[in-house]
Image 1 (tube, protein in one colour):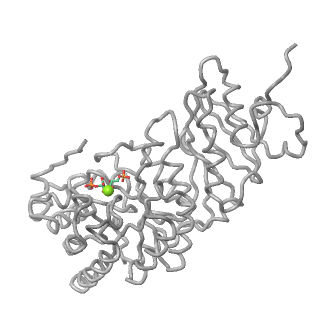
Image 2 (image 1 turned 90 degrees about the horizontal axis):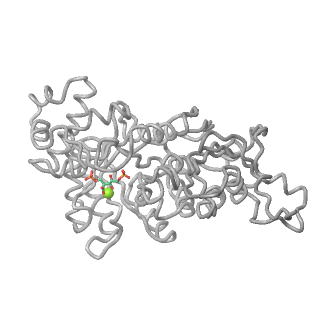
Image 3 (image 1 turned 90 degrees about the vertical axis):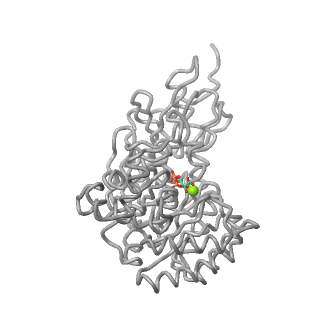
Length: 432
Ligand code: CAP
Ligand code: MG
């Protein structure tokens, strides 16, 4: 008789009823050749909690309490429950090192996808969530009945700080609430951060005086963490309500730190998700965008990019709706193999941000998918307007008005020149 050398199956118990205090995770998995489903599932639960590849000389019985349990298998989906004590409170990198860590590299799995996590109240209450959230930001802008709007100067990078601020001014004067930096604009030789901030503040003040509206900007502070803290302070000193962070490339640890810093200044975080598609694009492997959205709401971003379903970047309508649900609802209901139930307790709702290949002709589709609680970013789609940036922003605002009034864009365009010109160029094009 061969000796038992591993204990992976000890992590499976289909009779287990998760406790209210457990963290519950839904994974999609595909076992490698010659690996049974149970062998695969056991490894997922083991490697993400307390196990190792072989039986041990010593296994103190009390440690069994920390083992994860695979408790429900549904085709290639498995539900795993984790005892709360496995997790340090308020430490997001540590959670990821467990449920999104070594398991992705196991030879026994051809594919593994972390779909969603359901977090108990006792875990959630150690995170701050958004500082202002949807209600706080609406109150700040005094805009309650339409999406917030913003645009990035295009080309992405290359403008000087002066040129950037002038484009910003045109964007604001066209009716947009915000001007956004692109994800790869930080503080380059041709566009220094400090200079950009001070010129943008001047132009913002001018735009506010001339329009009587609140104007702001998502200026990108992405850098090494200490540097980000300095940049956050500079933004605060210049009266900006937001800072923008590339939350994936910066990492959860610095996101958490900056949430504290910006919270002290009463500011909000615009979260750009550049790099997300490296782990969420393959539907069989990696981490879903809804999971990323969940941990970002918990860490406390006020808004995060969530896709368009109709623009230039990947992302289905189902995914967009799942992300919006996670960001905006108080009680998220489980949905197919896409979402787990989540009670957000006191954590505020965050805005989804729709962006990428949008233009005025796509506004009705976007509002149909998202409703009004969304930040709408139209960049190429305003700067490419035949009459320029200001007219492009006006055309977008007209498209929002038309949609609110339930009038077709074509009809509204008869009395709104900027919208008419936009439709002549792009129509209802869905770019690829
Ligand atoms: C959009 C954008 C945004 C992407 C991000 C760009 O520009 O500025 O970064 O939309 O993608 O650089 O492509 P356009 P996502 O409006 O000119 O397309 O929102 O999917 O994270
Ligand atoms: Mg961009």
